[in-house]
Image (cartoon, rainbow, N blue to C red):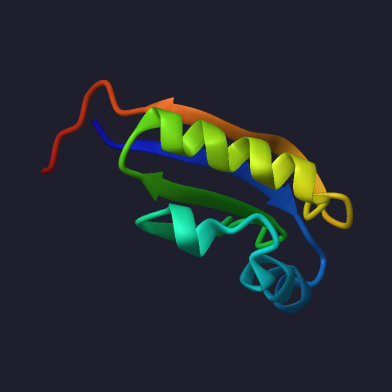
Length: 92
C-alpha cells in the first residue's frame, strides 16, 4: 500500500526554501516515487509537502534519514514529516 510523508513549513523566501528542498540532503529522490508541494492561497508563506513511497516502511526509513540529515535545521517546521497511509479516497 502506498504511503506518504506529509509536512508543513513556513517561509518568507520560497525560492530559498525550494533550493534547500531540491538539495535533497535526506536522499528523497533515491527512496520516493514522487512529491507534491502546495502553498497557501491566503498565506503563501505556508508550504505543504507530500512525498509518496511504495510502503510505509520506506516512508518511515526516509523520515528517519531526513531527521538525522540536519536538512530541517535551517527551515521553520510547523508540522514535522509524518508518515501517513491513505484510508479513504474518492474522485469527483
